[in-house]
Image (cartoon, rainbow, N blue to C red; front, side):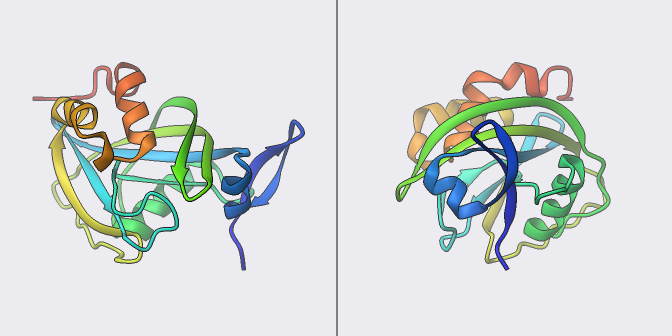
Length: 176
């Protein structure tokens, strides 16, 4: 079974196979999550087997809602599927649209609902190796500087979020 995601074709939102949306550069819905712990955020290194942006560092998790799935439910589902994280509450912070070449003839043209969640003291992480190679807690401002200094290490969307939308996403959230 293929993953059918919401994408716009000729101005109409319809279910489209995920890989087709990327091959054609169709505008489609997406979700990104940042887990926050004080001034730090959890980032992940994408598995080397991912069909695009393999081995690059990205935000805590990101994905596409399935056809008929709401964005908040999708965010919680993917936190569990990618990182084994459950029991968090996510808060919608922004909606961002971007278009980026992600290599191998694939284009991400996404309308992204961005969510944040606070790390809980009992939060457990169990990486799904087909999705995530590693995770790391990084100071958000240091991460923004790193994505500018060493852009080849980071996903296109993470660089865009931090360079163009950081204030809107994280304003008032970080505690020292």
